[in-house]
Image 1 (cartoon, rainbow, N blue to C red):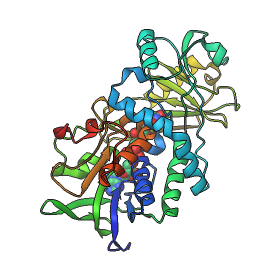
Image 2: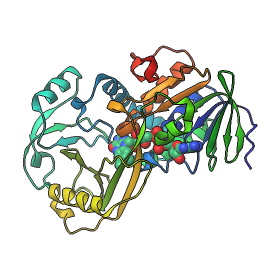
Image 3: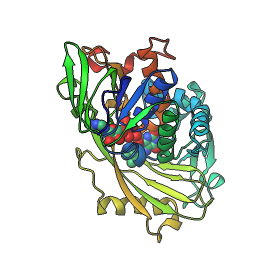
Image 4: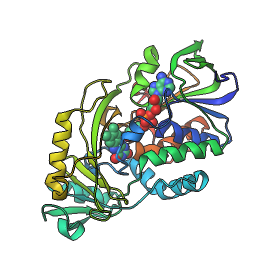
Length: 364
Ligand SMILES: Cc1cc2nc3c(=O)[nH]c(=O)nc-3n(C[C@H](O)[C@H](O)[C@H](O)COP(=O)(O)OP(=O)(O)OC[C@H]3O[C@@H](n4cnc5c(N)ncnc54)[C@H](O)[C@@H]3O)c2cc1C
């Protein structure tokens, strides 16, 4: 059994992209950090996601989402370079651009891109991606990037361990024990663990884990299914979006097609209906996919939150307990900013922008 009594300054619950990026920032600041993961790191939403480093239609979101995603997107190339250099794993960050096919609100897009210094071009679809079914007048966002999220999580873990961080897998946190208004220890399936500070980054499971200490948190799982195809590398090179459905091409010819948004609680299962629907939408955009069988079909539980605004904050009543969760559809994108904000809160450093929107709901 793992020695839970080895002292840590921080215990992070959850080995997804949010827990691991938070752990890495804290370890880089010189803290002794342990990540407790129920199963294995990076096997839940952070694995299942698509890795687009932008909201799907950025102009549809509020400023708190924009601030997190834009700060992160600007930091991403250097962040990934550092992680790749220290881990030896390349998460395949690539500025592949994003093509938005109709219907969209052009004036909203124009206004938002102009006011947020985002490059936007009006292009025919075939000028950008000739393999698409239709040559519609489209919006082209050339600066949007993507990352191979399963590799990113592996790289984050290794970079964290290289900083002296400790990962304990197969350690499910089952109880939070208080001494007055501070956490004294966590009960886990691998025994008790204690530290100076505790960070909950358990994705869709953060609210049930917090239990009686969660109200009035409004977080819930939102299920997403995805299909994977394999075509000739280079056939499609840009992310393509239409009416909430997207194709994400990887450099090696894999194409992700997603995703569903299902409010089905913690039930994590793929369905025939979703497979047929996603396949039909994929083939309507890219005809070559019509007679191609998907090579994989998977499902993940996003940590859903109102308006996609996460909570990155100290608990209002429990002094040494922090939450970094609720990133919903954009946790891979928001990871660098979320980790940075959390570390700033803990070390009382100046924040890069107003972070009051990410406070515990009762404190906003
Ligand atoms: C289909 C789909 C497509 C997506 N596409 C994108 C995209 O293109 N771009 C983007 O930015 N985001 C995307 N996302 C969203 C993104 O994946 C999530 O926002 C992000 O992964 C959340 O990270 P997390 O670390 O909070 O959660 P998770 O990755 O779910 O990690 C939480 C971890 O906590 C662990 N845990 C839970 N309970 C306990 C416990 N009691 N004890 C110990 N450990 C525990 C879990 O095992 C898990 O490993 C997508 C998600 C899905 C499902």
